[in-house]
Length: 127
View 1: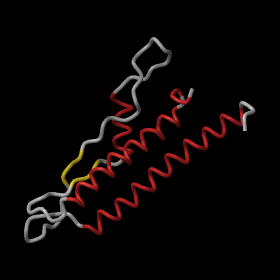
View 2: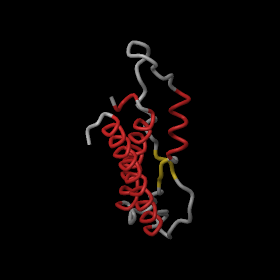
View 3: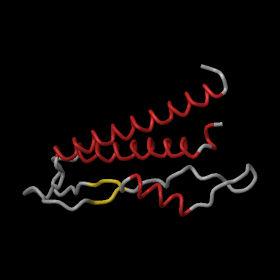
């Protein structure tokens, strides 16, 4: 039932993107002392979601096409930045700011999903 609604598909894609980005941020933090490590990040959710929508046809009925999951798997990319004397480009302060942004994105996705769920329950008379 929830899979066919575009808003729930988008919320699921946002939560998935936030999880993938959190993993890249955690890797950056873990490698903060590794000489020569280049900090990485994932493209913004809007970029990856729009690319997924344009790349795959959408199913309009069960036997039509295989339904797309919403967004493509995000790819980590190197970030430009000033390097420390050992060649490492990780900024712990910057990574912490990104971690907060990711938490906000994940919380927003959960809020949207809960709101849609509550609306559907109310419309069915099941509160």
